[in-house]
Image (cartoon, rainbow, N blue to C red):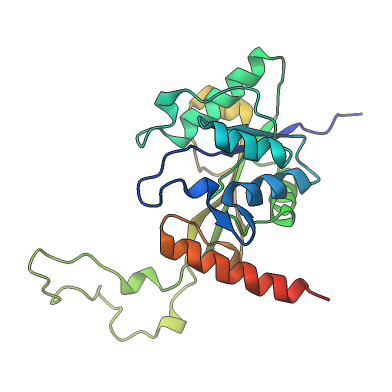
Amino acid sequence: MTAPPRILGLVAARGGSKRLPRKNALPLAGKPLLAWTVDAACSAQAIDNVVLSTDDTELADIGRCHGARVPFARPAELASDTATTVDVMLHALRELEIQGEHYDYIALLQPTSPLRDAQDIDAAIALLLDKRADAVVSVCEVDHPPEWSNTLPADGNMAQFYRPGIRTRRSQDLPTSYRLNGAIYLYSCKRLLASGELNMDDNCYAYIMPRERSVDIDTAVDFEIAELFMQRFSRRAAP
């Protein structure tokens, strides 16, 4: 009998943030922003272990308090503005391998997506296994059709703003477009370690999430929007 794949839930949270200082520790609907993602990861049935990668002692304490392990400290060079997500993931996998832990898949769960829940994580993993995929990445519908967007010249002139054939088309007649929402990145550890890249190829599939659970917090306005949705979901769940 084949053993089920081992899946690591990696929560990546650094202490620094320029646009919204200390955002991962800021209180959102009664608990730190980071805690929402750690709680969701720990509640997901398909995740074997939840590990927090951080350079910050306060965030490490928050993570442990909510059930995450913090078996290593993230190096300063991987907590800078220029550090890449894939480097953080590779560092975590290699550190855990040194400690004797091996996984088949890694689920990167960013704290800036607090409305993504355990059911989303389990559903994304179910899709991964059903498709026998190398990767599953969460997406949501865009707020407005990208066909209605364009760049502007330095003087702001809009003479070339409309793309050919778009001016006379209604938005509801355009195909549905999606964007990455930053909530879930599921990858084969073998492929990730071999390539060192977060590839999206023929064996990568989209897990579609609703826009109301796709808030990605980068600014104070995003934080306020997330708080409003948290309140709405709490009212729905109330008996």
